[in-house]
Image 1 (tube, rainbow, N blue to C red):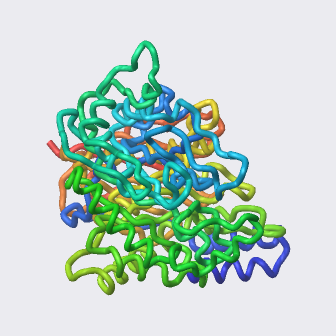
Image 2 (cartoon, rainbow, N blue to C red):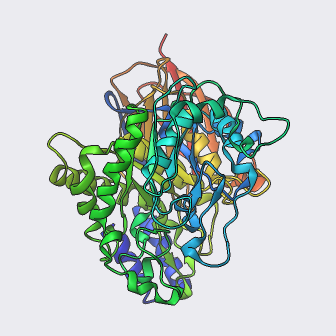
Length: 541
C-alpha cells in the first residue's frame, strides 16, 4: 500500500497526460516476457463455501426480487443476499415487521423509500431461491422512532426467519413496552399464505413453513458513522441519543457516550443474548471501522468494540471501497492502483484485525471476518469498466483464500454487476470467471504464487479431482506469457480454457470457451491484455 501511495503522490505533481504515461511506464517496467506461476496442490489454503460470495442489496431496489436474479447469481457462484443494505442509513432505519422505517435523523420529511417489494413476504422466497442471507438488524432506531434499536426486535426477526411455528417461547416486551410476542407467532406468519382480505400482516405472510436457518446476523451498519467522531461522520442513524432540532447542529453529538464504541459493544452483548436465546446457532457480527488503515479518525472504534463485546461475537465486518483517484482534481479513478488493492490492502486489514482480536478478545477466540460491502469506487470517472471485472475476480479469490466467512459485492444494480435493466456487467463476469475455477462448495484453494504482480494467480483443487487456474493480466496494453508449474498433483494434458477481456466487454457477452492442450505439470499460457484466463485441467486418467 505504501508503494501505491508514493506513486499517487508522485503523479499528483505532474500533468494528467504525463501521469498516465508514467503509469504505463510502471506497468511496462514491471511486466516481463514470461511471468512464472507456481502451484502447489498439496498446500491447501481454504475451501470455497456457499456463503463466501454474495451481493449487497438495498431496501429501495425493487428489482431485487426479479425472478432472474437468483439464477444469474448462481451462474456467478453467489448464494448470499445481504439485506436490507446500508446506504443512506437504511439498515438502521428499517423495521422488518412493518416494512417501513424511522424518519432519518428525525427530520420532518420522510426521504427514504420503503417499497412493498422489499417486505418479508417478497424477500423470504427470494432469499430461499438464492440460498441464504446476511441480515443486518436495526441498531439505530426503535419502531416508534423515540430511541435506539431494540434487541427484542432483532430476536423477533430471528424467530421469523429461523423459528418453528409451534415454538411457544416468549420473546417479551422491549424497553418501550412493545410486545414482541412468541417465536411461534412470527414463524407462523412466515408459514402462512396471504389472506384474501389483508388484515395488515400480509407483508409478513410468505407461505414458507420451513425455517430458513439464516446464520449470519450483523448488528447495525457502519455504526461508527453515527456522529461520535463529529459532523463529518454522521451519516448513520443512531437514536441512542436524540438528534438536535437542526441538522446543522449535529456536531454537538461528537463524543456523546451513548454513541461511543464502548456503548455499541455493550449493546452488542444485549443483542447477542436476545437473538441466541431464540436460536443458539446464529452468528452475531459487529461492524468495524476500516478507516484507521487510511486515515487518523476513529482509531479507538475497533479496540473498544472488541474489548466490550468480543466474547459474544462470531464475526466482524468491514466496508471496503478502494479509493484511488488521479487526474485533474482527482475526479478520475486510478484503475492501475485499484487493481493493486487486493494484493496491497487485504492482507493489511486482515492482519490488523487478527492483531486486534488477539489483543482485545478472550484467549483463543478470534471472530471471523466478513466484507459486507466491496467494490472499487464508482463516484469518480471510471476509465475502463473492465477493471471492475478483473478486480472482482482477484478480490473475491483473495478474501476466500484469507478465510473470510462472506464477501458481498456492492451493490446488485450498480451498473457494474447488473445495470438497471438487469443486464450483467464486468463485475458479474469477473465473479463468474472465479466460479468457473472454484465451482462448488468444498473446492479447495491451493498455494499459488506469481513472481510478478502484473499477473494475479489463484488455483483450486476441485472436488472432482480437476484443477482450476485463474490468471488475471492487469496490464491494459500488453499480453503476458505465463509459465505455469504444477506440483503435488497429476493432471491431464488437455482441458478447457475460458477468456474474458476487452472483446467480451465490447460485445457485452460472457467468457469465450475453447479447448486447451499442452497442460500437465508445466506449460505456458499467453494471457491477453486486461484479460482473465481460466484453465481447467482434468485429473489424469
